[in-house]
Length: 116
Image (tube, rainbow, N blue to C red; front, side, top):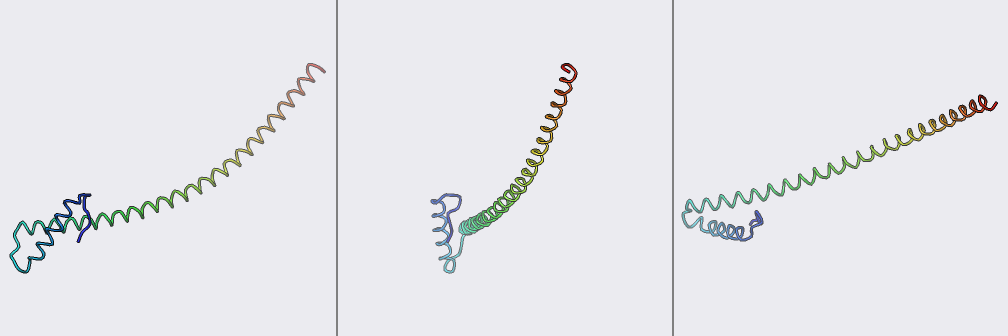
């Protein structure tokens, strides 16, 4: 009956023992208000434990979804980045050739005007 709740083993041990004692005397004796409060507390701690387990499972599922999303986004980004790199290399090549042609033309004009 029960897992450790709130990381307090002493409290959990006491609550388990007390609730078992109360449940064992339920058919034989009248249950007091204090006993009912202890049983209510035990029910709530069990509920908290089960909710904790469920929430942790849900958080794991959400983490897996985010991991999948990150991986697919990274793949798309890598694809876009490679396209950008190719375009940039093409633009750099055109500019380099354009600058080379412009420099050659200017040098040719310089030679023709001043030397020739």
